[in-house]
Length: 142
Image (cartoon, rainbow, N blue to C red; front, side, top):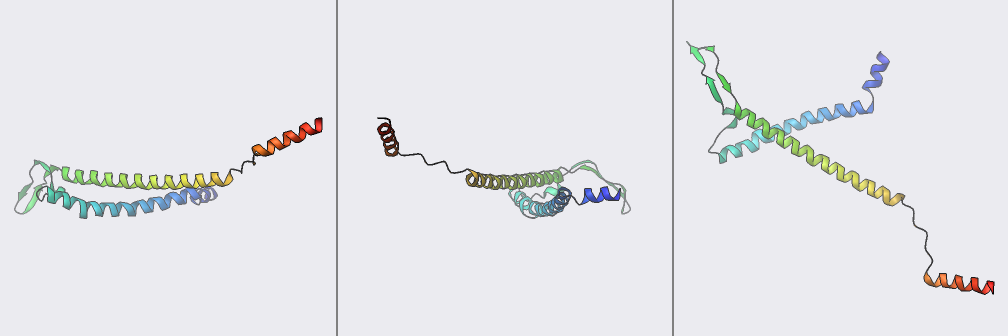
C-alpha cells in the first residue's frame, strides 16, 4: 500500500496539481485584495460612498437587553454577495487571459516545429533544363 501511495503522490501530474493549487490560493488572495482595496472603493465612490460589505436586507432586528445580544440580527448580506461575484469575475477573466496567452505560445511553438520538420521540396528543373533534356533524348533516338 505504501508503494502504491508513493507512486501516486510523486507522479508528475499530482505534483503539478499541488503547485497549481498553492499558486491558485495565492492568486486568489491577490485578486481579493484588488477587489476589496481597489475596485469596490472606486465603485462605492461613484455610487455615493456606498460600502458594499455593509449592504444588507434586514429580515429581523437584533434583540439587545442590558447590553447583551439576546437574538442576533437575521439579514441577507447581498453586498457581500456582490463583492464575491466581482471577485469571481476578475479571477475568471484573469484565468481566461492566462490560458489564452498559453495557447498562443503553444501555437507558435507548434508552427515553429512544423516549419523545422517540413523537409525542403526537391528542386524542380527549370524550363530550359527540361527543353535541353528533351533535345538530348531526341538526338539519341535519331
